[in-house]
Image 1 (cartoon, rainbow, N blue to C red):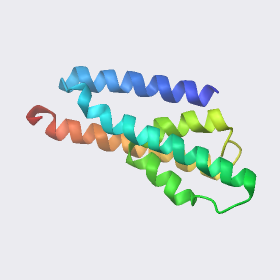
Image 2 (image 1 turned 180 degrees about the vertical axis):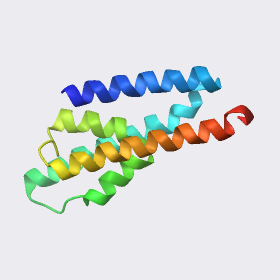
Image 3 (image 1 turned 180 degrees about the horizontal axis):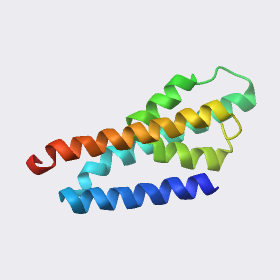
Amino acid sequence: MLEVVIGVLGFAVYGLFILLIWQLSFLWFMPYLVLSLLTFIVYGHDKRSAQLDTRRIPERVLHGLALSGGWPGALLAQHQFRHKTQKQPFKAILWSTIIVNASCFTAFCWFFGQAI
């Protein structure tokens, strides 16, 4: 639960910081919202597949969705579905994707923010 609170609050503060510093439109965060919804749904499907012992979603797909911007949805889905919460390698990779995604978005805004 603490990870979800940290992640969601961190995303809100980070987003507000980016919006204020580079004066971006809220539309820049629409991909995060769409990818978060998609990631949340995919995590739910994977959890259901695990319960039914059917074909699972590969972890590289879950991490790819998080890396591309769906990490807020990944954090919420982990908590909601109690899915992938005990696997330490998975959690470490997920937090790494969050750091890489936020760093890349910040770098993008740093270099192109004035022209946006």
